[in-house]
Structure formats: C-alpha cells, structure tokens
Amino acid sequence: MSGRMHRGWHGPGGRGARGPGRGGWQQADLPGAQDAPAWLHGRLPEGWFVGAPDVTIDREEIVIVGELPPVEGEFEDSEAGRAERAAAISGRISRFREQTRDERIEIARQAEHRYQRKVAWGARIGDVVELFTTASVPVMTRLRQPERIVLDTLVDSGVARSRSDALAWAVRLVGEHAEEWLGELRTAMAKVDELRAKGPGSAAL
Image 1 (cartoon, rainbow, N blue to C red):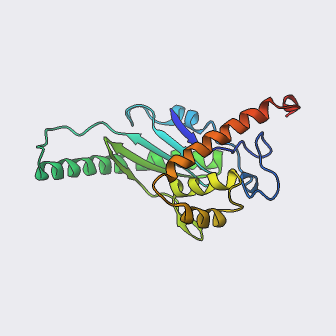
Image 2: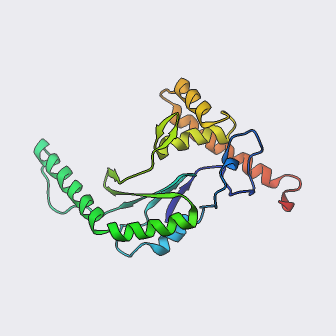
Image 3: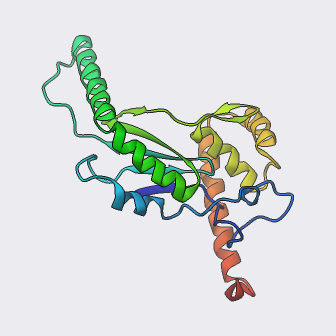
C-alpha cells in the first residue's frame, strides 16, 4: 500500500508541531492519518485494483487512486486506433465507478469518521488517470489537493505565513524548475526533523 503524507504533520501536539505564528498544521485539530494507507489495505475488497492504490493525504482530504486492469483488445497505432483505446479506457473506468459506487461510499464514510477528512476516489489505466468527485477548498480561490499541498509545503517550512501568502509567493515564483525546488525543500525539511529528533532533550518528547 503506497501513501503520501504531506511533510511536517505529526498529529496534534506531536513531534514536529509548529509553534504559534507559523500558520502550519497546528491550526487544525485533526487525528493523525499516517496509518490510512494500511487501514485501506485491510479494508478495500480483493480484486478492485492491480496492486496497492496510491493514497495521498492532506488536512482536508484523502485521495485514493487505484490501477485497473488494462483494456483488452488490439488497437491500431493510428488516430482512429488511439481514439478507440481512449474510449475503451473511459468505459472501463466508468464501469468500475458504477459497479463499486455503494461500497466506495461506505468505505469513505468509515474513513471520514476515523480520520476526519473527506475521501475522494480515482482510477488509473496506464497513463490515463480519472479522478471522481474531489474536494475543492477555498484558499482565495478554489484549489484541489495537489495545489493545496504545494501551498502547505511553503507554510509548513516557514516560507509563508498562511495559504494566502503562499499563493501570492507561488505566483511570483512560478517557473520551469518550481517543482524541482519544492522537492528539494521537502527533503531539507525531513533532514531538519531528523536533526531535531537527535537533539538534546529529544528522548523526553
């Protein structure tokens, strides 16, 4: 089971919680969700997905995207063939969505009660990914989870005081290597957490 947890969140009062004025995770009194991928591994029905789904978590939402079996049949390497393959994939994902709707609703209800976050679903076949209904959270404008995670990385690292500040900062920063830089920032934050854990008094935390 694969899962991605936004860096810096260790649960209310946990190690790595940010102090007042940082505008980070401490503002949300939420239960930890680090075990959500494992919980879903035990809860999801056998045979839904090929392998473990990708589980992405932030403070508002848990997004579950699973790989479906490839569509059967041969498709010509032509414009018509590619169109037929795209239609077959769309139909296959639509069938999964309809056939699993009731059980997905029940799983989402249980997960939302356990983790106090909305749950959204998606499916992937090859390089085609289709997300079902996902949350759109107001942050000056309405943003979906990948954009919110970018803003929260900036807030949690202290680059910005709030999501609104992070959004303005990100707009100024946008450029060719923005994603590469954010990855380096997350790596640096992980190293800071490791050093903090090794520091004086860490055993008492």
